[in-house]
Structures are given as structure tokens and as C-alpha cells.
Image (cartoon, rainbow, N blue to C red; front, top):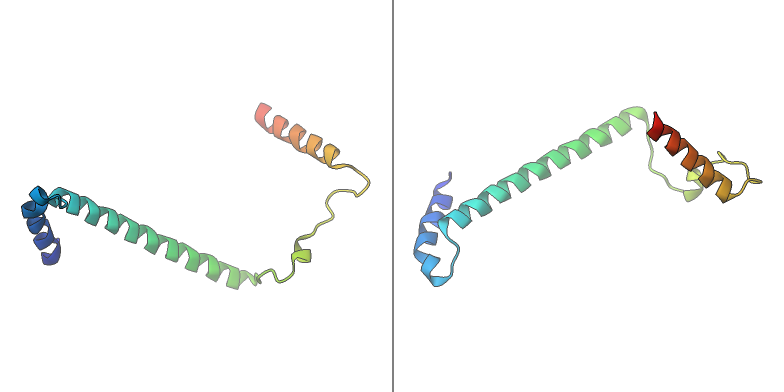
Length: 96
């Protein structure tokens, strides 16, 4: 533990009677801050890895919403038919 944190913990004991956080509360805050910092580092590392993988695979950002359009469902069939198919597939997955 750093000297600055130890000093804060010790000074917290004297302030406790004045409604200030206790030493234990300071430690809990410090530990929570450390966990959040570690999660932030892990998040940044994961993002960097994803960006690198995308670069290696030649993935480019989507610049036009039309690029996402697909023709996987015949136009003459209704949305209800599509939803019925989705339900049937999900039910099949559940029963397996």
C-alpha cells in the first residue's frame, strides 16, 4: 500500500467522528478503484486485440447502411412466415 494511501487511512480514523469516511471505507474505495482500473486495462487490451485482428483480416468500417442489406428472404414471403420459421428453428434447438 502506498504511503499516501496509508496516510489517508490513518487520517480517516480521526475524521470518523466528524462524519468522514473511516479507514476501512478508504480501503474499500481504494480496492474498488484498483478493480475498476484493472477492468479498464483489460477492456483497452481487448479492444486493441480486436482492432489488430480486424486489420489483419482486412475488415473495413461500414460506410453505407445499404452494405448491410441482404437478400436472404424472398420478397414474396411475408414477415409472418419469416417469424414462424425463426420460432420453428428455435423450438427445434430447444428440443435437441
